[in-house]
Length: 200
Image (cartoon, rainbow, N blue to C red):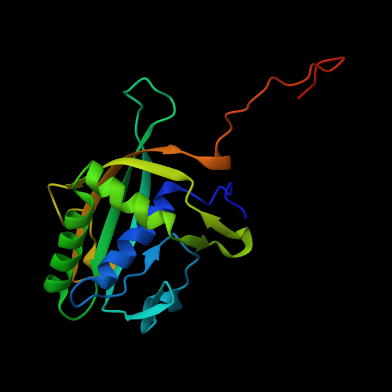
């Protein structure tokens, strides 16, 4: 397995978790996430979104995300803090209803601090992710805490003409975690000293 692949990130696992919870909700919808997997314009027009071998109808909602590293304020180097900023766009029928469903789903699943972390740790322990050419990976992260925020101006950066959206919502998820398994390097040793120093 390629568990130490650089594509095996905590954001990847959070994205997959959110995607499944949205799909399994009441009146669930399949939401493609970009740039988690390679994408083409055809991906946006697919009728079905595949999540864990199940097909969910694409209801005109898509998500893009930005990963944000946070400064370590705790003084312990192995517990890291990150934020993921999500942009959810609804582009067709039931725009308002779909935005409410997505937002409420995220809030209910990921805004319970260590309880949310316990649930996602359990979820990840029963799954692997196929990274294509990089191989199949296990989760190499243990989550400690989750918080959910929303920007004050929900629609401030959305260019409706360019993005071709009718509704949008921005959500920030902040989480603490540490790396486990062979993804980290706890057995670091100094390099053997060469006879002469390397010229670089």
